[in-house]
Image (tube, rainbow, N blue to C red; front, side):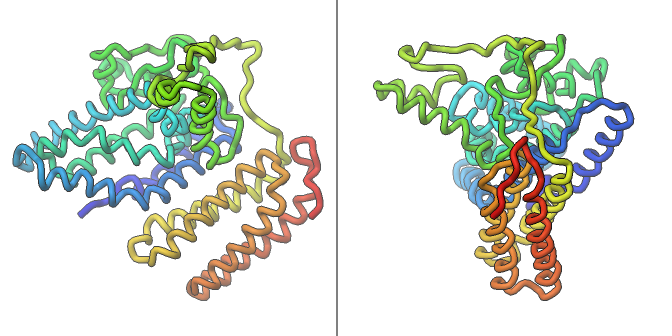
Length: 408
């Protein structure tokens, strides 16, 4: 049986995030911002529900090779698990390293690096499209003959291990720093400081970076994020913006060779007529500032309510999709993404949100009625949407981002 260990771990993730928030609040460390954290978690929700439509296909790709082209029949024993664990971690290193060195791969992976904070919510900030190609790097394991379920299990635990290293609360693990990927090593990986870029690609074992020349010890303070900040809380744009940059660069290139190279070269590469390679700029601490548009405190309650609605709806889809017809799953996924868009747009004070939000709230009511949800769900959800319509109307009076949201 194929168990989704990552989905089952979601409650634990939120418990640990709560503990870290409490710790940082007690220590007055300012590691969290509401807008940034909502953005990070929105990416995680989107990645999980969109992944529903690809997981089966990707699993069968590995499974087909295992069943038809494997070279060996490997016994299921403790040594097989240990060897496969090392193999999964080894190929994760190369997938991760290539995701930083090939523009087309970086266009997906960049999502994980966009946050300018570093806390446990960043671990859940995942690309919606990365899994569509990452599985290819592990196919040698299928050819050798490692069982698909064993592979998926160890791959999931490799991912789960990396959750806890997204923290600033743990400084050093002593001798383990020479063996394991630790919070200190992974902070370096998320740095936009030139000396930290493209370092420490490890999943569980840092030994791969030490062996292949990509290790960097944490030294000066880390500035988190990407060299050209996203400057947006829009979860859809976060997944598409670098593709847009690559496409515009390719369009400006008269040579077909350069058009192709734009997608295959490392980040920072440009054709000669556009100035050639542009290295990451040094960071000036005096002029450094994080993206943090102002929003009225009274928006926080509305944003949190609908983030929770999106979280509950997304979790329901994640755990129940195998028992539901495809239409409710697709419509539910679209509604969740629209809800996450609302949260980001509110925190940015986007004017287009006015008509969008009323339409989304009414759409939510129509969905639960037309898809014939149980009467209890219809009453509760429709009630939340109606209250939200009234609440949102009153919020239009609030001054957001130094501009009043206009009347409808």
